[in-house]
Length: 521
Image (tube, rainbow, N blue to C red; front, side):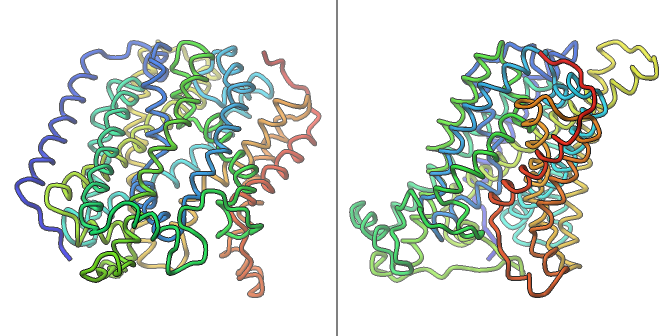
C-alpha cells in the first residue's frame, strides 16, 4: 500500500517548499524590536487575516483527516455545533475581549493578576501550558504519522521521527524571527493550501462516481447502513454518551463552554484576537472566523459523504465498491487516509500530502508562539521583576525566540512519547492527550466566570478551582472509572457534558474563596 509519487507530485512538493522558503525570507526581513511587536504584532494586524489565522489555528491535521471520517460514518450534525460557537463568540466579544484590551494584556491570564495577584496568573498559565503540550504534541504525532504513511510508505520509528522533525523544524523556521505577525500571515497561506487540497479531492471524487448529483443526494438521504439521513443537520436525540456529543442539546451547552474557552481563555487562539488595533476589531475578527469555519468544515465533511458513496454504494459505482483498508502496519487509519493511500490520483496525492503538512503547521506554529508568550510574559518576566533584575525589551524578544525553540523541542518530545507509548503500553495516552484541553478548560472557565460575575474568590481558591476542574473531568474517563470499579467501565459520558460538570465544580470551588482581591478594570 505504498503511495507512489510521480514527477507531478514532486513538482507540487517543490512549489510548496519554495513557498515556505519565501515566507521565511519575507517575514524575517523586519525583526520585532519589542515584545508588543513579537507577541501582539504591534496591535495593527488586519481583521481579515486575523480571522483566517483563528480559523487555521482551530483546524489541524486531525481535522483534515478526521473531518471526512465524520461525514463517512455519521452526518452533518457536527456543523450544528457552530450554534454554540456563535453564542460563545458573542459572550467573549461582550465580556472578555473588552477587558483584555482595557487592561492592555499580552496573555489572557494576565487578567487574573489584576484580581488575585501574580500567583493566580502563573497557575493559569501553567495549566494552559500543560494542556497545550499534551494536545499539540499529540496532534503533531498524528500529523507525523500521516506524513510517514504517505511519504515513506511505512510507520517505522525512523519514518515517524523524521516526520516529527520535518514538521517541527519547518514550523519553527518561518515563525521564530518574525513572531506572531509571521505566524498569522503564514497561517492564512497554509489555510488556503489545505482548502485548495480539499477542493481538488472533492473534484476527483465527483469525477470518479458515475452518478449525477441528484442520485448522490438521494443516496445520502436514504443510506443503506442507517435509518436517518446522512444529510441530517440537527440531531435532537437525548443522548449523553460520546455518540451524542453532536446533538443540538450539546451544542447549546457544552459546546458553548468549549468555544468560550477556546476563543477567550486559550492563549493559542485568543492571542490572535489581541493583535488587532482595538477590542471592536478583535471581536469582528473572531466573529468572522466563526462564519468562515462553517464552509471550511463542510468541505471536509462533504469529502466523507462522497467517500461513503464511493466505498459503500456499489449500486451507484456500477463497477462495484472499492475495498476500504482498515489498518496500516497495524495502525488503525481513517477512511480518508485509506483513500489517499490507495485511490487518489497522481498529482492530487502530492497536493493532499502538502495539505496535511499545511494543516499541521498552521496549528503547530500557533502553539509555539502562544506557549512562548505565556512562558515569557507570565512566568519569566515576573520572576526577574521579583528578583529586582531589570532587562531591556529586546532581551525579552530574544527570550521569546528561545522560548519558541524550547516549545518546539517540547512538543516534538511529546509527539515521540505518544509514538512509543502507543506501542509499548495499553494505556490510552493519545485519547487523553487529544482531550486534555477540556481538562484545562474546566478549571479556567470556573475561575473566569467567578471573575466576571462575582466579587468572590482568592488566590487559594483559584488554585483549588483549577485542580478541581481537572480532577472532575479526569474522573469521568473510562480508564479511571474502570480502575475504580470494573462495573463502571461501561459508563460513557460525552466530553461536552464532562465540561459542564467540571466547570460547575470549579466555579463553586473558586467562589468559596473570600480573600482580599485587587481591583480590575
